[in-house]
Amino acid sequence: MNQRGGHGFSVGNAVDWNLAASFGGKLARPEPPATDYTRTQAVTQLAESARAAEIPVREVTGLAEGEGIPEARVVNRPDWIRAAAHSMRVMTGGHDAAVKPRAISGRIAGVQTGAVLAFVSSGILGQYDPFGDGDGDGGGELLLVYPNVIAVERQLRVNPADFRMWVCLHEVTHRVQFRANPWLAGHMSGALAVLTEESAEDMTKVVGRLAEYVRDRRSNTEEAEPNSAGILGLVRAVQSDAQREALDRLLVLGTLLEGHADHVMDAVGPAVVPSVATIRRRFDQRRHRKQPPLQRLLRALLGIDAKMDQYTRGKKFVDHVVSAVGMERFNAVWTNAETLPLPPEIDEPQRWIDRVL
Image (cartoon, rainbow, N blue to C red; front, side):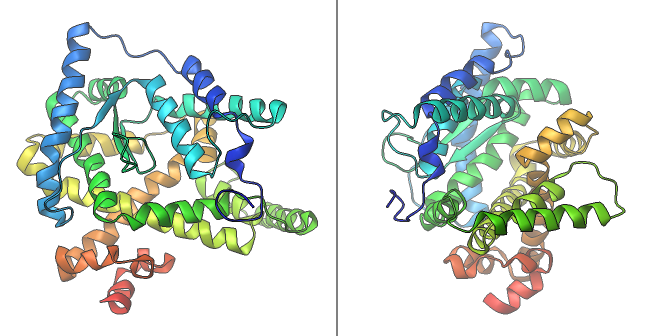
């Protein structure tokens, strides 16, 4: 029996996480050129913005009232990679990082994981990690990746102070979501445990489902370009029923969390970010710009485009419900796993209102 209480072999035990962190750090792209003054200013301003964003986010959401405000950790790309490797080990049920996995396969998996983290590390502006070390209390930590913030604010040609606060509003909302509702981390980790545990299902059934999926795709007349929907379909084709249900739970939760954060950014933004309209417009244009073929494939494989879809669909859900019933009644969504939206309800929010409220 593994640490999660299941009988399968946890994926988290098959990766050399120390190697993933060190190799990923070496592969990370160089930071954008900046003076010491600019770097120091960005680090200081992000930390201050993360503190300043907390109160307006609490006021808009009605969550986490009365709690202390934890400090954010402002990091570079290798720091984020190390933190992400630690979080992935915890999320996937891996053993203590000091314990070595199977030598050859563990190192290969570590190199592969490190390469993925290195690719992702140049695009992450911030992240609330509910499984991070934080200040040692096990309550998670907020990471802000200052080189990426500098790079994007330059690319968008927006006011740096405003953009840094805008980023913090989104990420602080995630921190408030998880700290006000501690059960969310357990819900997420339980679904991940199912997804990352090797299935005892007969391999012939898996191969059969995969072959059927490929045949269906070939008979489809749509353009055969890799995209997140296609990759997701491929993943679902080889999953067990339990794994598909767990994936649905994670996708719905991610859509809700991202949409809620985007809703809060727009609700709080005008009061604390004077140029919020310009930032939103230019950032959305950046999200949807055309990518080179190889980058499109990597984004699809890593689920990045699916995450972009989560922002849009989730925000529409939250906007509709809050407009219809108000934020106080919307907050019933955080009661427990049963009050989270079901997959069809994300696109039909009235069905959630009718079922839960």
